[in-house]
Image (cartoon, rainbow, N blue to C red; front, side, top):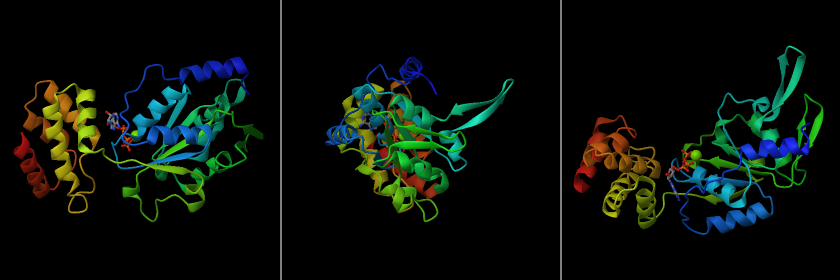
Length: 273
Ligand SMILES: Nc1ncnc2c1ncn2[C@@H]1O[C@H](COP(=O)(O)OP(=O)(O)OP(=O)(O)O)[C@@H](O)[C@H]1O
Ligand SMILES: [Mg+2]
């Protein structure tokens, strides 16, 4: 087990020193702050590219807490989160996984796309997310008590859930949840202008194209154009790419392979650019 100076050194690596730009959309900053004060596990729900990761980075910076992010996938095992014995020349050596490191150093542990993980993997977070705040390392025979600053945050895209890929109620009901969505047009344009350094008029038009696509969700599109893609389009425009080509490359082509849908979206782009 690492001593306290070692712990501080590890924590330092995960501290965010420069403010990540985050434009609040409603009262999510205060709500999260209150949840953090209670060390309550938090779930961020919302579509891809709407600002969930950026929000956590911003909050970790604001709270001056280390942030450890884990991208979850279906091949991930409990050992990938908790840790495992590794073989080296001197025999076997225990290596903490990211969840264990976060619990020891008092980090915010962000499990991104947690539904992707299998349910038998997800349950390892249970003892950390209720009053116990412990993590049993069964293979090592150690019970890690979470540092007082430790908190778990998970992200979740409700759009993609299927019966096979959903969180168990016993997992869901360990979290308070904040809903995220693409921001209202004025705010979204402000974000794009800030992120890509484009003018307000271009940002406005990009948002209008995105809104057209979002109306097609469920009518041929699985998901509308995200804020992330709008930032890409604005960045291409800023590099001197013709706006209509930039929109095709950053907004339309990534979204769909269906020729009719592409025509529909290209036409929407043509109305504005
Ligand atoms: N409220 C916001 N403030 C600042 N930037 C934002 C905001 N919302 C979206 N963005 C921009 O959109 C990009 C994508 O956001 P982010 O990576 O946080 O999405 P996400 O919700 O985590 O998506 P995914 O579910 O795919 O991981 C950011 O890099 C940032 O440029
Ligand atoms: Mg993310």
